[in-house]
Image 1 (cartoon, chains in turn yellow, orange):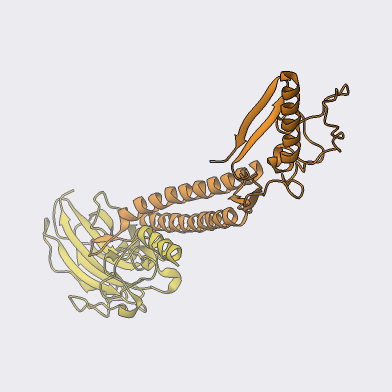
Image 2 (cartoon, helix red, strand yellow):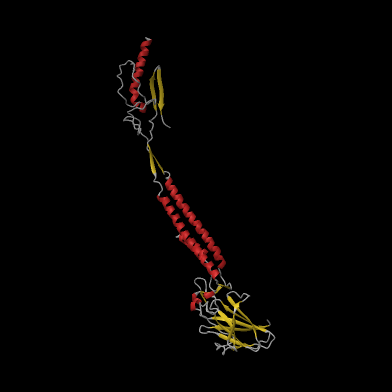
Length: 195
Length: 209
């Protein structure tokens, strides 16, 4: 009996000890054993305390699922401070759009950065010429690193004055827990600057 | 006249010796029939017989195995019982040593995995919010730590079982106790001894202390 107790103590002593709500969820809602990803804050918690995914956008932009329905960004000027859009990509939300008209500047570029938790489906950006409905490019890996548990994707493109542009925010198609976490929250930062 | 007295004294002494011989204890056990006493000394030319009194030759009538003389001899002392455990065989000792050594080795390897698990666990243990994400690297560390912990536990278990088995084998294979009985010769009560010798007599005695 004593040997059994010592054996149990020995096993307990060297098994990782991670209490609930200690870690942020990893990709595909990854959490330590016996814990699951909490939807509202993507923290790893005990199954008894888990809540489903929830997201409330700071600005009501829906419906914004097409280029025609795109949320119009305010006039940013040739050099602007970032416009910040804290939004949601819900399970049945295929894509979100924002649009702007390039100001009349000698040279101007758009810098768009989307930040999202790695816990749920990944998000990607595409820049579209809405006047011609052509895809001008998509995001790339950002040079800077985001906060722990977040991923950043960047898109920088030179704009032509007077042209209408649209930024499409949509699921990247991976990191969705094999379809079980096809949702996420994101923060889109858009600013204009001189190239 | 003097020669006649000496002859009479010798004759008396010889007769007295012959009369006392049974009471002389183990020194004079019953032997072959003594030559008839004729009252005069006789010359014996045959090979001299052993006399236990002098320890020259064993008397064939004397029971050497138990030291119990024939009826009328000295009494036997109380038996002494000595209980002892014989040494283990080399095979037994070797087997127990190998089993015990194996248990120690298994325990040592288990301890290695235990410490490895603890070291890895310490990098991911958390008792409050860390602000860190549960990345694949941490998952791998967790899995390694858990695997090492399980391995340590299994090795501890096997090592403990082997150690327990060794302990049981040690007790089971313990040599049986042996009893050795010693039959001591108890000396008779103090006895005076007077024996004729050539040219005189031998005076002695037996006692125990």
